[in-house]
Image (cartoon, rainbow, N blue to C red; front, side):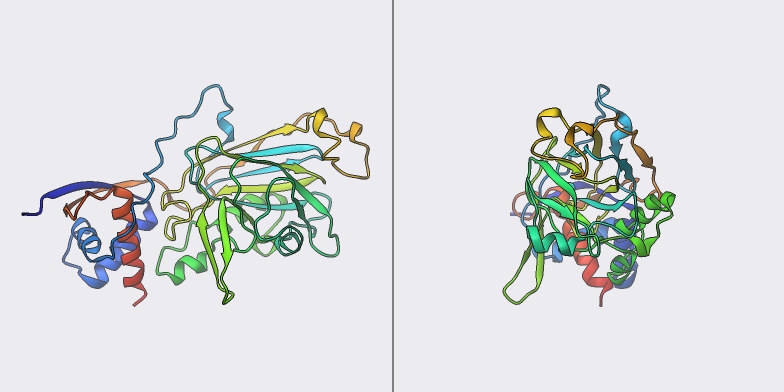
Length: 332
């Protein structure tokens, strides 16, 4: 039976486009990019069907549009004791980085090491997030968690990580967080390791680390209560190469609220003050818009003609195969 050609249209980020083009130039410069992707898919080990690309995001006009944080941007917020920040999935499948400092003393910051020593590598509902020595006190509390599966093992993705893989080095989560925290006089060296929301990590018997994405859908959320006056920086992970957000980073929604009266007995913010003293309106969201250079997530489309191999592959599978093939090519 003769193979039937099938056209598949891929959405590629600027970094994915550059990676594929560099691999094509190294291996077969005479091919068009579409022909190179078709060859990469034909030669790649068959992949399992990946989740469909997230749907186009429609901003709900009834919600605060300023709370919609696209990839390449971050929400930077000053939280009073008793304020709760809510991080919510928009399309689903998006990993999120969170870093935090004390507003009283920036040397006190979220400690992934201290927290995992107490709560394990994957904190969840009811767990406390701790600061490091010499402060060592509860910093934030997880008061809601609709889709458990978070990580305290992996650092934020950095320019070096992408450059080492032969990719354009920015955007990176380190770059986004640095740009967002700069308004408080903080630098890259001041960044703590993050809490990686919706990244499920594991440790193998030989000590090596692994991760998978936590299954999430629109509306899944985590809420964190500030136990001390806190600066938090929250950004959608910009990984469009290694796959923690399905190679297609998307936006998240961030909002704040006050701790409800009924919650105060269970979650007494700032133990040096009585719960009744926790008051005050939420501070407005401070958004640092697109701090990364270039239009990194202005997606480009590429139509590829494939010879059908069994059931037709989705665009997500073709893109994943081409990116994986290109990573191997530039590493040679």
